[in-house]
View 1 (cartoon, rainbow, N blue to C red):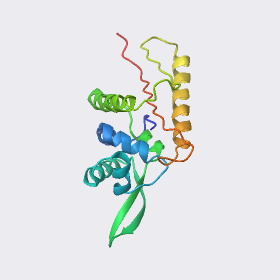
View 2: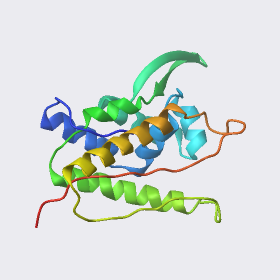
View 3: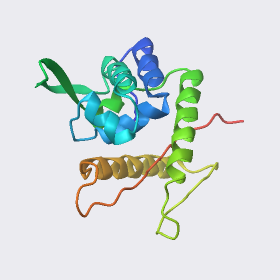
Length: 179
């Protein structure tokens, strides 16, 4: 998911961040990147109840982070199939620190869950830093992170796609107050 500053009002951006601030919603956004699923399909993929997944899909849709791409007939009813466009994250921008802290907590919980499924011994990369850099270096790092996010999202395959490798990626870059 790509996050950035947009023209939305602070209330709309805060709602988008609150919608993201739940580990299951982060999983659903990843699952639905480029591939549409109904609540029932997504529930099976993440091992949650359909009612729970349906609730979270509605919250993400209301926040503008999911789109309904089709409605299909299922046993006499209608099921919506949702898809996440990673560019929708651009609608979530700079808001109060409290909303960003909620998102960070959800990212941390999701990172802990994913780490529990990590293939030990497989190649990986880890970088953590709090440092001072020239503005040009910062701009380049942000551009590279956005490019990495776009590369991964554009290459997303459906779950269990033959030959595909299941991976996790969490990249969070932000400027700090000068203290």
